[in-house]
Image 1 (cartoon, each protein chain N blue to C red):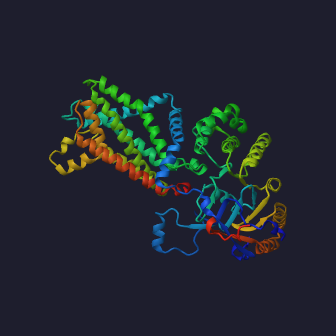
Image 2 (spheres, rainbow over the protein chains, first blue to last red):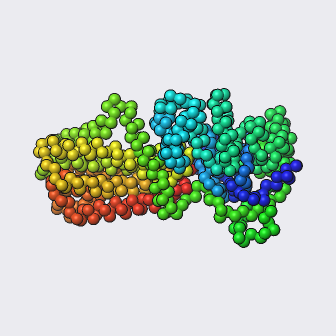
Image 3 (cartoon, rainbow over the protein chains, first blue to last red):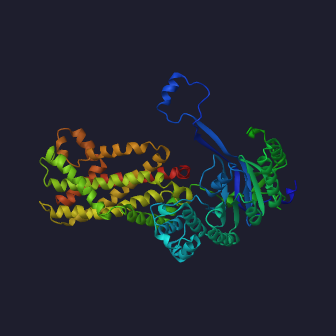
Length: 298
Length: 295
């Protein structure tokens, strides 16, 4: 593996640090339990509507350090934990264990930052802006810009519940994008909306990326990932598989998905295991600057 | 597919990387209580806008619009007047029963409405909570503010009814005492709302119990009968008189209806209730600050 040029670690100026984060969900399964339940269990079950809970490991313990100025792409199959990782970093979910540290509150540009459906689009713009901590004057000054990015025109005065899902997503993107965040998280935001919006949002994204301290990008489009990032992290089933150069990681990921698509599961998983076994992981050690020995700092 | 996730091999190496975490902030970390209050103050525009915007949208679907803010308690008052005033005749010995009933019903509705919306504020705004990181107490506060602003026409209607419906009562300086009552009532409602909001965000089932609890409070607060019925039972009377909802209604009746200056004791009790409940509510809510996002 040639990822040695970007050995993860030696962070000169960390922006986002994921310290041993893991995420588990408890969900209700409709699957019948294999053991026949005892009589009193059967009785109790009538009152408890959800007896069969299953723990899903959305993300297994992993550490990640993103430095200032880095753009990191996150790739993986569905259910690999990409979006979970983004949710954890943005604070939309709290990790079951571990912690996320960041220099400032990361802002997620996604399609799932829902707002208040009863309110009109323009009211949601103001509310969302205020919720991000912008001042009223700032929002008013940039209101036209936000509406332009969203491309909603007159519909901005209608209640948000009357919007199509594409319109809603566009407005959410426009609101989130007006924040000029230091840490920017993007979750598939470029894949929604029509071609016209795609061009507009791409332009806004580029502006934001230039200004932002660091960017994390989740996308299924490997072209987008290769174009926009300088480092790629590959997750599979909640585990870190690779972390390195975009070209190398996306190439291996393509090999893996092609093998899977052909039904060649064994060789796909062999590839995955091989890559994983040559992965160099990081372990975050809290070391205050003053007590750190000078040799460690490069 | 037969993938054994557990069979994933160990990575080649695990490097210990020293990072000065003290320079970074933990995402979603709960600030200290005083910092939290400062944050809430910084988000006051959000809170206020949230309250304002939702009042307007609340009755937009109705033909009569905001008139429902007043019509609703009037119809309520009429219902109680029919049942308790005319049918059951609980009005015995109560001077100006209509005024008595109207103040009881209106003041009770202010509290029950505010507590109900405050309690549900976290659960109903999950999208907003998950989308943005603001101090979560801004939502219950905003909801209470909305209720309060929405109640202004209702309070004016209440005063008009007392003024106009015979036996009409005169305006005295004591009407000004309504302002501190409303302030204390606001603090009390907000405190209860904050406590319930945290509880409901953990155990949703409480929403089903809430209407019963609120109805019980109404029956115990002498909305349509007089506490004089318990004058032979000093213990019951004591308990009933300590009920904050009753104190709110009683002070208002004294000041607005009967031209009596409410006793210092009632003021002290209400102030104690409001401040204790508000402080307990704020601290209780703040302690779970990090968990609301999970929903």
